[in-house]
Image 1 (cartoon, rainbow, N blue to C red):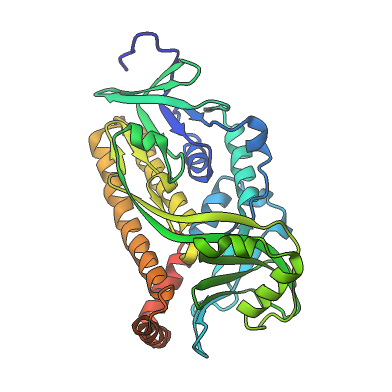
Image 2 (cartoon, helix red, strand yellow):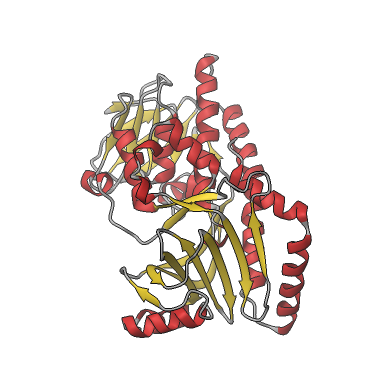
Length: 398
């Protein structure tokens, strides 16, 4: 590699962002023989023991398999792993629901629910123990530029790092993406997602339920016995009104939106709020650089694909890198990056567009949309190939 003047650190790969995607990429490159430098503005303590953020992640079998392969899943406390046996979608005006369940083996779950902070803690612990990974916490990227044989990163500490490949994983609002000159299409849904945990009288039977009801969307994600994650999306203009409800008022509100299907409900956690904004990058690569995770594609959570798609991007890129190393090829070559971009676009584009279509259909309350929604639910419930395709995306391992 040609060195730049005043280079402070030489490494093979720089990963910007120690979120789930960035940490997954670092773990996936274990044993590659490559030196990895991971840059993160948060402190070491924040990464080692992340705060609870209210988000429960619906893990596909592919994501579970990845976590198992690198010894992370096995270290989760079993009480933090919750089975997802079935999923249903219902609207406020229809008596029936669209259901998704396994037809190949009813004993196996559709997926698994694990809290976001638990996953992040496990990934960080694994990555921090790898000999080929250096994690620079409390550091921000000030500038990046690429040349034919290297990417160059300048930190807020004025240190300069040169690498063969830059991996960008610093969120859907990625500053590094913009530094690379890559634009992104952002879709502001004009809604806020509120998440919390609630106790309820009626058993959930490990079934996730999505209710679309008169401008509000509510999802129930089954956790331990008698407890579910309550995920509410409301128009941004009405979010303040909901967040200001006292505990008693919020309990009544939750019971009403669930049509009493879970009996009496009780708030048992803090309430967390997040704006809903989808992002799809114009490109997933630049010279000597690749985008993964939310920096490439930031999903609406309604179909629970976001985390799993991020893991898939990290694994896809890491496999191409390891193959290049094995064959003595350049890990930051144009052709390798093009292979990654094509593969991840094929994976991500249908999921992203399909998710947005679902959101648009089920949050539109004009009469025509209601008729279309009713038809879509009815047809989909009887269209076996469609249901099998959705289930396969959750249950496939490769």
